[in-house]
Each structure stands twice: as C-alpha cells, then as structure tokens.
Length: 184
Image 1 (cartoon, rainbow, N blue to C red):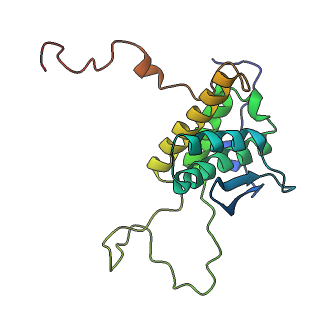
Image 2: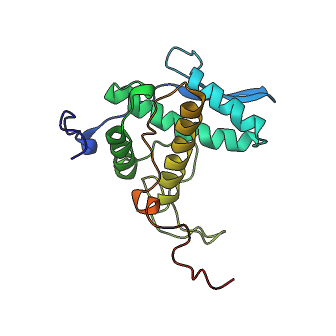
Image 3: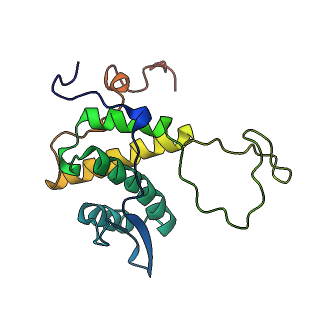
C-alpha cells in the first residue's frame, strides 16, 4: 500500500468541471497560455512552455502539451491538491480517471449527426473515436506530466519526487535487456 492516509477516491463518479482554459495568444514567443478560472496565467506551466520553445518545439507541440496540462490542472482542482503537493497516488488516480472518463466535446451546433462508434469514415476509412480518451492520449499525458515535473524538480521549483515516475518495470535490469549484447 502506498499511503494509508489517502482515502479512496471514487473515480467513476468524479466530475471534473471545465476549470481554466488554454488560450491561443497569437504571440510567436508565447503561442499558448494556460489560465486558471480567474483568467490568471498558471506560472509553473508558463515556465514549462518557455522551456519547450527554447528547445525548438513548435507551437503545435506547446498546444498539445498544454491540453495535457489543462486536464491535469482540472483534476487537481477537483481533488483539491496543489500541483507541487501531488503524489504518486494522485498521479495514479489521474491515470485511472482519464481512462474512465468521457472526454468533453466542443459544441456540435450545425454539425452532421455523429456516426456510431467504430463505424468507418466513408472518406478516410478511419474508425470514429470512442467516447473516452485514446490509449495514446493517456500515454502522452503521462509523458508530458513526467517531463513537466522533471523540469520543475531539476530547477528546484517543484517537488523532489516526480508523481509520474518511469514505469517501475523499466527501472530494473539493464537497458535493452531483450537484445543480445553479443550481436550488433
């Protein structure tokens, strides 16, 4: 058991409201900004975005990462945990919640009726997405949040322990253990 003091959360009933938003600024040097419910910039995320841009990441990458951070901030808001106090249990609950929840949809005013889930698109042949987040979105969120917390840990502005550590199974053994070291 990780922490005996943490009460079980009923993630199936957890209602995460649309707290805050990701704002497109039109500024090349700050293409997106995560703001809270009052419209104030979320400073730790702004620092992360600046690091992404300094590393040469595209505005589309900043937007993608921003959506992951927005989901995390909304979750933290509902469970009443400050970002710097998030634990592995909070990260685990987030990872479970994002797999259980129905993703919010933009208003579908004036759009054609939706096809049934799994029905192929007549033009592209791709199947329609389900009501929840895709496994790739879940994995992407965890990777982004791990990088976010690594940055703040290394800068001394975040918690010492990353709530999104690498998969524990990948920590043991040698790297590339499935490869024969005698082969090129």
